[in-house]
View 1 (cartoon, rainbow, N blue to C red):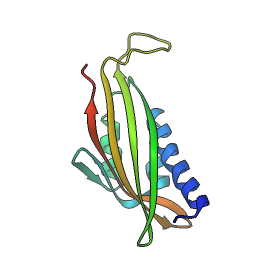
View 2 (view 1 turned 45 degrees about the vertical axis):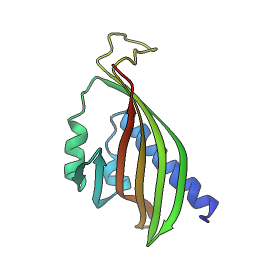
View 3 (view 1 turned 120 degrees about the horizontal axis):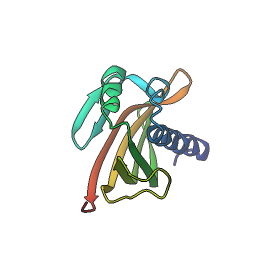
Amino acid sequence: MVDPIIYADITQRIHEVYRALERFDYSFVERFFTPDCKWGRNGNWRQGHEAILAALNERPANRMVRHVIASISVEPEGDGFLVQYSMFSAHNDGAPESTPPFSTTETRLIGDATDRLVWRDGQLKFQEMDGQFLFQAPA
């Protein structure tokens, strides 16, 4: 059983990363990822801050995206924690609307994530972040 405070800290860190992704604030990579962190999406892996930032900067600048995280499981593993959760993601690249609500006809995804967080410099950092999409609604 994981200490409830650790569980809350890990849950908060996950939400911080996804909220930053939604705002195109990629400073979280340096703050919350180990220098050798592996970041994967559906088998496409990037490793290290520079490679992860390059992948993030390829995202369309006009993307509107939101994530919902659920069913978080945290287990001790080595010098850190294995974290698994489900995710719903909706995005639209170039919504013609200038204010919400935006159309979500482009992509709606449900997937699973498996992350590894470790203690570095007195804080929890991602050593690996891996997302696998399971369902995609038709566009």
